[in-house]
Amino acid sequence: MSTTKKILILGSGMVAPPCVEYLTRNQDNQITIASRTLESAQELAAQFPRTQGISLDVSSTADLDKQIAAHDVAISLIPYTHHAAVIKSAIKSKTQVVTTSYVSPAIKALDEAAKETGITVLNEVGVDPGVDHLYAIKKIDEVHSKGGKVREFYSYCGGLPAPECADNPLGFKFSWSPRGALLSQRNSATFVQEGQVVEISSEDLMASAKPYYVMDGYEFVAYPNRNSVPFRESYNIPEAHTVVRGSMRYEGNPAFVQALANLGWLEQDRKEWLKDGMTWAEIQQHLLDAPSTEESVLVARIKEVAKFASETEAKRIISGLRWMDILSAEKATIVGGNLLDTLCTQLEKLMSFKEGERDLVMLQHKFVVEWANGEIETSTSTLELFGNPARYSGMALSVGVTCGIATQLLLDGHPALSKPGVLAPYHKDICDPIRALVEREGINVVEKVVRRVAQA
Image 1 (tube, rainbow, N blue to C red):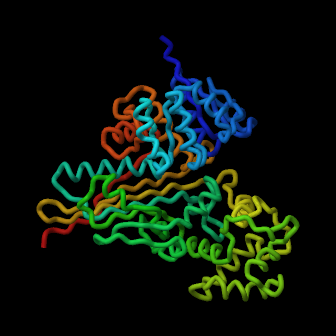
Image 2 (tube, rainbow, N blue to C red):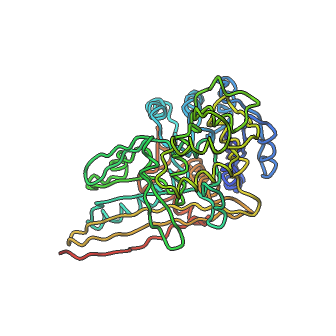
Image 3 (tube, rainbow, N blue to C red):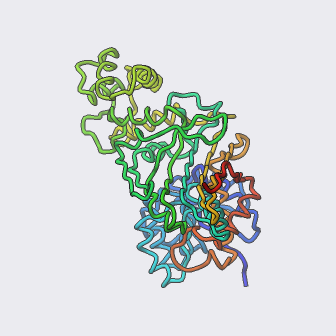
């Protein structure tokens, strides 16, 4: 019987190379990289043995079905909005599926069909979500096994430029989709605080960012993201009265993103008035309903509309808008007929990593634990992962290798990862084998007790 395993990787973007590299270590694996652009798929495939590149438009159901049916597992590294279509196709041909994305309602709805077909749909095996789960579950299980209770749980993650490379007004560079990065800062947030469910609207999210200490040498702010409430159940900590998961950015970033939103630059709907040939200043004039494109006029209106917290902040952000050229008489490249994609194209030119620059993945869990004797202990689990400019970014490594490891365990028939249905790493039997292999790849989380308070 042939032991050859055929793996289809959908997407040839930033996180694909380390995933492919890990999987090609196994001589039995044959990999197909599928991208809408044949050249990008073939260029990546040429770097690895037993790997080919093909062109595939996932919106073509017939083409997607054909390719998925020809493989043992499909890894979906394309935008999450396509995952449900990939899984539906995989159900038809009884092909396993792996994604690095959260289990969305659309994915959850396919659980029964996946179980009936007998396929595994393994999700959330990147860094956030992914590595974060591995170390949250580890600590929580250890606390429970010793009779303790997790009273408070905080988890913040940031994909950032290393401090020496954070040299632009946003303190940010794109190690993944600019559109996705900006939109992630426009989500609403729901979390549990002191026993109460708290909701923050997308409009107020950036204003909720607060200074957050992780370790010396960094000035971060943190804000909640998405819905943290289900993690009280997912992580099996019903005793917790505070559960918050969120994002980290360098100080000053959220206020800048909020200003861009207030000025209209993050709008996604098509604008009929947005035409090729317009200058950046003309676009900003239209957004502000300003009487002219003169910079002094635009700046005065920006101050009225953006509602800056202080004159110092106003000067900092307006200086940043000049740096972006969006107050200038330069002609803008209009993309998608909307403001967000037009801005993202400009920012991608200005805020991509240059040769030799490195990124930083910073992840920290904070646990406040009550032990049986009444002692209160605060501990942290911290990942500080820098990219290697000569190899992979920290983001690509932590997402791609984690995904590759989980996929290989699935292919090897590991019992915890081979159960039919929709899975995510919320249990020790799934987390432990992935974590052991992740650590071998240099993704190391430091666990530390930072405070103990004896019973009063």
